[in-house]
Length: 142
Image 1 (spheres, rainbow, N blue to C red):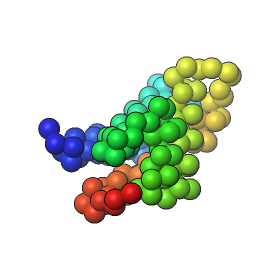
Image 2 (cartoon, rainbow, N blue to C red):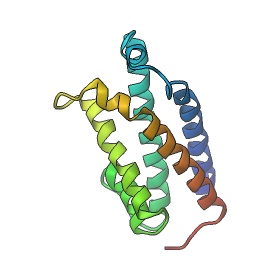
Image 3 (cartoon, rainbow, N blue to C red):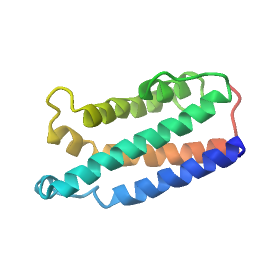
Image 4 (tube, rainbow, N blue to C red):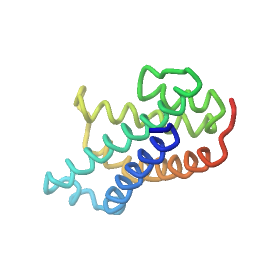
């Protein structure tokens, strides 16, 4: 499978996750917390979105013989290489930390933190989807 086809497949996956996630953008905090199903669904979708986007970033970086060592780095390197705006890539990178907190539940991560990041996460990765789709059609050479 060609790199472009792999990217297109992953972008389709990302778009599907974003479409599922969109229904939670306007959820009220009490509805987010109860039933647990809503909270777990949001958490899982954040995991899937970040992991899929990181895979996309890694695939692009791999074309330049750059291998990211973390979710954070997969996004920040896109900014350093000029593929994405540096500030935007830093914005995306912070979601790698959120994903790790959800997965590993280290510290005492609070529901309020995840809840507060629903809309920013959706908005950021929707923008990521759009920018990477544009990049595939008009690649920049770093």
